[in-house]
Amino acid sequence: MREHVTIFAPSVFRPLYASLVLLATLAVVPLAADARDDAKKQIEFGISVAQRGLWREAIYRWERAAQIDPTYAAAHNNLAIAYEHEGDMEKARAAYEKAVELEPNNSFIKQNYELFKEINDRTTRPDSQ
Image 1: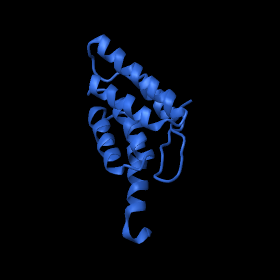
Image 2 (image 1 turned 120 degrees about the vertical axis):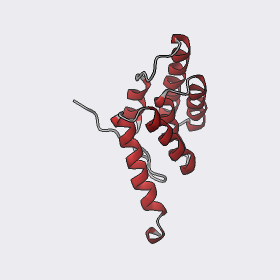
Image 3 (image 1 turned 30 degrees about the vertical axis):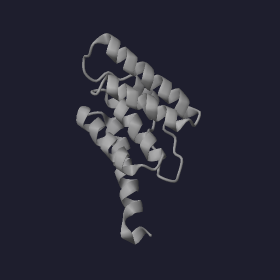
Image 4 (image 1 turned 45 degrees about the vertical axis):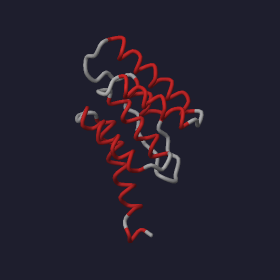
């Protein structure tokens, strides 16, 4: 059975752990095993600190994972979720776009990005104020 994946709204906490945990295990492109392993460790540690509410540390870990392996879509997806949680919608959008670019057929990443766009666009329209 497939889990329902949700993300954060700018001012409303929504569960993200299923997205993060799932994406921590995905491999994108063959890479030197050591680099991918290092990036995956950063992703997993970021998930554990995010679950404890330590978002700045999670962002640091996921940025580090993206530096180690720029092709790791999970790092960019998780960064997008964290940036969204922290209210940085421009960085969130850029990170989602990078994740989708890297894995255009990943349904979890696409769902996260579509939900982000729907909520962000709705809250930033002039008639929503």
